[in-house]
Image (cartoon, rainbow, N blue to C red; front, side, top):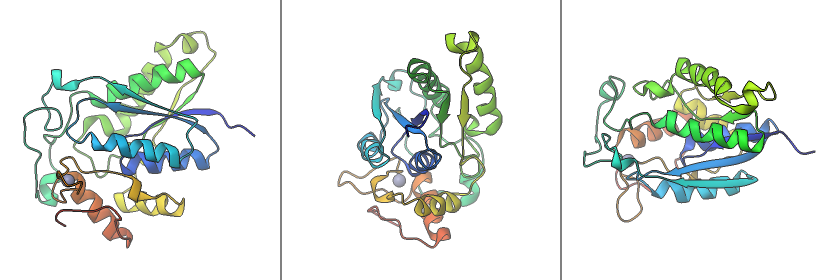
Length: 231
Ligand SMILES: [Zn+2]
């Protein structure tokens, strides 16, 4: 039996791969969406393609635009990616890797695709515990976007469709996310999290994203299958 369509935002990272696996387990047919936005770690797009195939997505679109024209982030501008920060520093404030309004931009494309294909469900691997510094990963932001989404579309206004934004990871720790994904058979060797990959294809092991990932695997009692330059 064919499931209902859902749009899944796939970054190539472990959170979105896990959110995709949860959506699949719930019986949705997945339509994946990724973005090449001028990010320093464009390698993640190749991982997103592998994850989309692994999740047996019906379609996978990669949209291309260049947020370097706006800049203002360590991921899209000539700003160094913070390395070797303490847990306390990572947990405080909004980091230099915040990309101005990025999740609003991404969710807007997801909304457009959902309307186009008649999907009422969008899955987004946002997580507010381990990225508490990102304002656009908070549940109150997600609910506000969902409210807006239902005012924004032709299908919504005509009463034919109600968009739900699913964020199954929003209250999970990184370890809980990894345990959930492993239980669903996710191959984390396909995923990429590092903000500042080394030329040889290794994750740096020192940026916030690497540190959160490595600590998550350690807390989950599992081995991270991707290669690191430094752990
Ligand atoms: Zn890194």
